[in-house]
Amino acid sequence: MLNKMKMWKNKAQVHRKEDLLQGPMPAHVAIIMDGNGRWAKKRALPRMAGHYEGMQVVRKITRFANELGIKVLTLYAFSTENWKRPKAEVDYLMKLPEEFLGTFLPELVQENVQVRVMGNKEQLPAHTLRAVEKAIEETKNNTGLILNFALNYGSRAEITNAVRNIIQDIQSGKVDINEINEQFFASYLMTNDLPDPDLLIRTSGEIRLSNFMLWQLAYTEFWFTDVLWPDFTEQHFLQAIYEFQQRGRRFGGV
Ligand code: IPE
Ligand code: IPE
Ligand code: MG
Image (cartoon, rainbow, N blue to C red):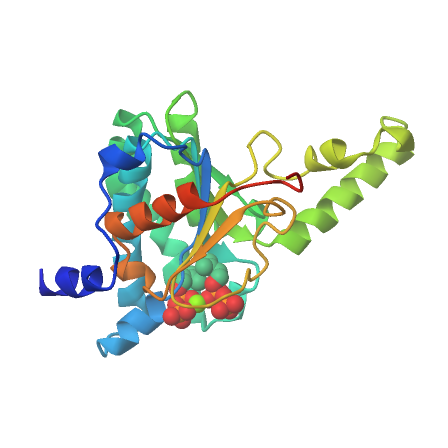
């Protein structure tokens, strides 16, 4: 409670879900969930404790995004660069999908959430892949929120792959070079059936993209906060949506 009061002191107002539901809702929200390690460090806990706590926040924010009628929630869970971390941390992160889905999957099924994963799945350990494929399979007919985990995802790899696949299709005669335009190119990306994100959130005070959705974020509204991911609440999410609703999106027009 004290923490909450401190948090609200600097804010102009507390936002209510009911009020924000009157305004335009972003259809696709993407989040770079950052700051788990620093959250743990502040408490003299191992980094894994921060990842565990971050997973609880994923559960909370997924439920909330669904309630708000958001169509797609993309969460950056593991980047192609995160393999550089100590093996023990990588191993822990690769166990999290099982841990998360093991307890949360029934709730996702019941709440009509459709789980997806974008990223290079072939490089994932077999146990991680098994857990995510089970979740994808069990929720594939759900029609509510699309919960899209970016797992072993890197935007440069995604774009490079798209180029390779397009060239292959040209060489095999399936595609004519004159067909290639922006829309065609986007159809070779992992987001081919999703709208571009309307709102990007990054926590923990880092102001960078870290190889996340470089193509798809071309006209996205960005919202950064110093709050560490394990401390992220529904109220922070509402703050981001409130500010999104105040912005004038022109897409190059007037
Ligand atoms: C984000 O938290 C989670 C992942 C990248 C997997 P970090 O682990 O990057 O936390 P910090 O940035 O070290 O605080
Ligand atoms: C980005 O966070 C990746 C995820 C949140 C999964 P990082 O913590 O890996 O990014 P950098 O290294 O600070 O740029
Ligand atoms: Mg980080």
